[in-house]
Image 1 (cartoon, rainbow, N blue to C red):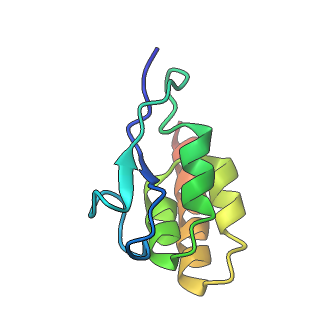
Image 2 (cartoon, rainbow, N blue to C red; image 1 turned 135 degrees about the vertical axis):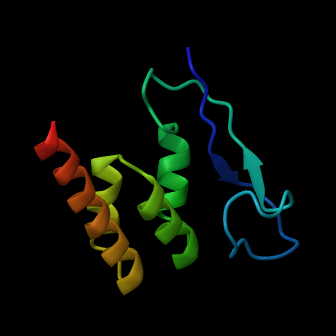
Image 3 (tube, one colour; image 1 turned 180 degrees about the vertical axis):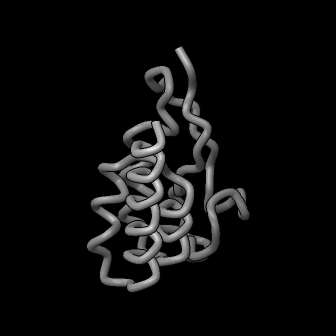
Length: 100
């Protein structure tokens, strides 16, 4: 079974995790949970990134994911740039479906 290749916020108290996933090994840990074939990341990572306190992290997820459920959740984010990125992701997925 494939493994999650996402970054997960580490439990630490040295400084806040406000930068992009993977930039700091103190703040971020690689995840290796099993995922179903074709999945981008495990549910734990998706949930942690989608609810992360940093808008930069949530926006990065919105720009990278093709998980419609995550995009729909992020499209209601109070940070306008996160919501806009998620809505653009939804349009991108809809366009890909229309071309198929």
